[in-house]
Image: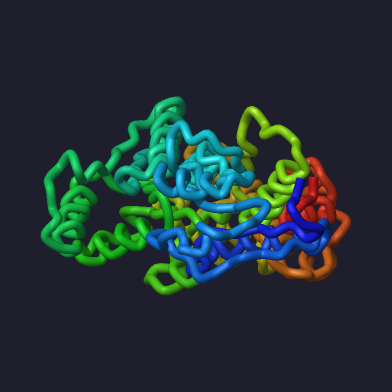
Amino acid sequence: MPRSATPQVAIFIETSKTFGRGIIQGISTYSRTHGPWSIFIDEWGPATSIPAWMKQWEGDGIIARVRSQQMCERLQQSGVPIVDTIHQVPGLNLPGVYSDDTAIAQMAFEHLRDRHLRQFAFVGVERANWSLRRRNAFAEISRQQGFECHIYSPLSRRRFAESWNGGQEDLGDWLESLPKPVGLMAAHDLRALCVLDACRRRKIAVPEQVAVVGVDNDDVFCEVIDPPLTSISHQAEEIGYQAAALLGRLMQGDSAPAQPVMLPPRTLVPRRSTDIIAVDDMSIALALEFIRRNACKQINVPLIARHAKLSRRSLERRFMKLIGKTPHQILAEERLRRAKQLLIDTDFTLEQIAAMVGFSSAAYLSVVIKEHANCTPIEFRLNACQPGNE
């Protein structure tokens, strides 16, 4: 049981990144609705040491991103329940709430596959277990779908401790050796920025030759680079909320669950680093680009055919042969994708969203969302956006 009427909770989570701040926001939401808690928090980064005041701290619980066995041991000296939110240390005997790395890899692969890419690659972070899990899952999913996945392993290529430039040159050599076009998943956004920089140095076109997906969807990182980076966002606030809920139960004396809580990623935010459909037919490539750029306007299949300089029948035949879908289906999918994103990112009404993305009515958009997401638009928005929603 908590030592005081107001539980004392320490938080050791990165405050410098969007993901970490999202987790902290979720903890705050739980504290406001189920607390209050007295929260101990300070500026925190991946290399920050456990503060000296922990030796005298008489608190009730800790939520942290435990990055090493040494950090775990230091925190356990407090004698209070601890909830982990990073899953970095193998065999760590702590309850935790984590992003599902396999689901993250699945989302990245499906996005790249939907661009009709047939070559895949992964660039990770050496000695990071969360990166290793994403790498293994991405490679296995590629293999199961009948594709090879090329993996960048710098420590097995050469030792390049001399400089940043040495690492970038080695990465550039590897990128040049890949078959093109290739869909590449980076373990997180910072690693993806390295890939985009190496491509720029070697004049490798992004996304035409290398389409890149990152993870974390940190707006600062994703928008600072040219082209802007497609990235997968976590359910950061939900991770924080669920971690706080778990800690609350532990502080009341409940036993730790046998398995960690695994949460799927929130969504993939497409940007120009994957704005490509890889097909050999130039007319169909032009049609696909036209759909992507104009989906929210009042376009239709005859207009798409005219842009591609094809008859409607020829356009539809080639679409079915190369993509397995009709132009109308691709147009509808693009409009649905944008409608879902607006539901997540804005407070616009369904009527406003339907008009913005090219659906004939809010009622029709509601039917389409129900068919694809198995829920109403309101339920979709709540499930995607509100921490703590079961």
